Image 1 (tube, helix red, strand yellow):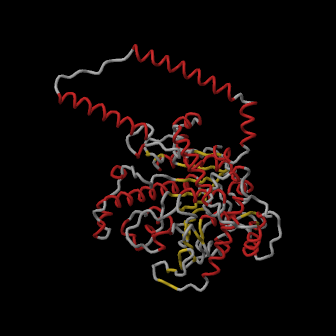
Image 2 (cartoon, helix red, strand yellow):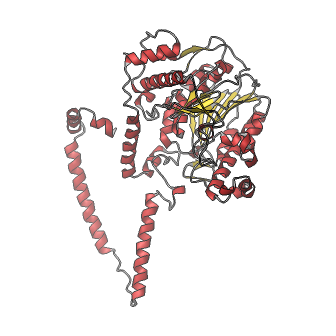
Length: 533
């Protein structure tokens, strides 16, 4: 509202404030009331003040002064962190929704943080506003992706597809699990001696599970993963969770409206606060039926980012009390700094993991703590999946990460180890080969893949990405692309095999053109809206 005011008709706003809201009278009244209250405060202070203690010895006076200064400093830190002396339990405008009451949550942040919130949101919204894509370019990109001349007035026509027919029985429940910082490299055979991903690896080994290794996130941070899963659009630095277009109506490519047509109730579960990245408002505006954050379920431990994953999954499992078909998107938080899980209490064997590390890394306590939190997240996800599969056998699970590139053992990891995330599809009807081995994708491919797995033939849907079942052969994030057998940096000419071997790629131009086209259409839909003119 602050920045929109600066761009609005200042004369009209001023006239409205004076004539309709009596601004001069209110300012004068506020001034008089403030003066009266200040005088009253002066009288109270003059009557009820206490003299400072007097000390005979110099060291006593010194100690008293040091104590006073220390208390003031601690109080400043305490108020700065919103009622805490440490970052681990601090309050920031992005995670201030610690209660279920919107008014109390707004009262948590002070005026300076509120103004900073306005500034930082505005900066994010403006990050991607300089691409300068015009209507002619959009039509050209749409024609490239659809394979035909694009003459429609609405950009959504470029996303229209029809399902080829269900490949598995329609599941009663669908779970899309976004593991915080859940990178792929711990699942690889070369790191099996660490045993920090045995839970998901055990699921991958089942006959009714498939693992798609050629998979990358939508962007570098968690919000990009959420916006891709919720809206179906790629990351173009526009932050759709703050963008006005996202609150007019759900995007045609959005998850919720399309799965409602298939008969599902759509829920979003987040282990953190609903105010983080405006996540609650965004997912509800995009058609979700319910949003549940840390203030909506019981939790006995956690940190500044929210509840420990154990309590999040317990709450989700307990919510299934009737036969309503549901699709639940789940975003975990525990595998995130400041890494406060009591790993020893949870049973993490630090010495065993350290012994499996390279010699130069065995004494790296920070690395061991990070690996331990990955182990904890893996264990909690796997336990939940197996529990729900037993409780609700007709369920389908999609397990992936929000991003990678936070923790690596090697100081020079391969592009695949550094940036790729897993995609595991497990559950009713899944069998090896239901998704081709030569498939590659990113978060924007999850919605069309699920639709093609369960929707009847001819079901109309919208997606930017292609279904993995229909041979999607490219995925991309903010800075890398991936194909079934290679990975490379966007705008760079070289590429690597998954093991890090350098290679020459003959289809480099077509990869870049596909990425440019998808990003251009996403940018136009978020920034300009539906109409192409």
